[in-house]
Image 1 (tube, rainbow, N blue to C red):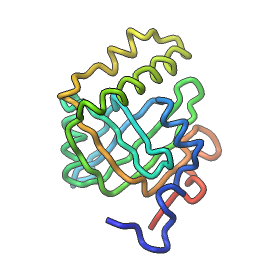
Image 2 (image 1 turned 90 degrees about the vertical axis):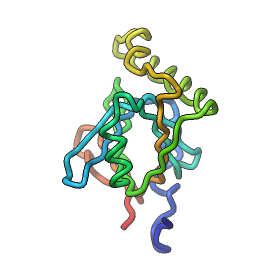
Image 3 (image 1 turned 180 degrees about the vertical axis):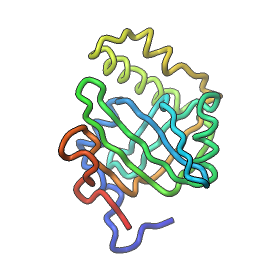
Image 4 (image 1 turned 135 degrees about the vertical axis):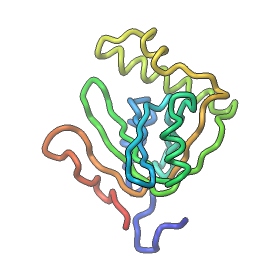
Length: 172
């Protein structure tokens, strides 16, 4: 599905500093909904973003994220919140179309980079790497990669700007 011609390009939704921040490995929560609008959400075990911010992939452990995955398959709608635990700096991206695939050997490096980033992030607020590894534990053959092109982006950092679209951060 192509964006309308008068819409900003996907790269315009997230500035390079947002993409770099996400790529560092910050807390990633994935949400969707079913046909009756009942929400589902789960912590991702990994996340990756294209350098221009135009494509995001989040990784879910299918053993613990069954409802979210079922909702993503049924509706295609996704909302992802990226948050830095030590500062609560947060942003949310949304899309109406996702592509799911089993994680592959090439994804292992992404998942390891994400784990290292989260170990550092959570270490800033006193959690040990052991805790982080337990929280993000998975087997590669149980992981589903969920790719999407962001269509909306919002500042979700607590405070006066919470909920505000990022500059250029929404498409019709």
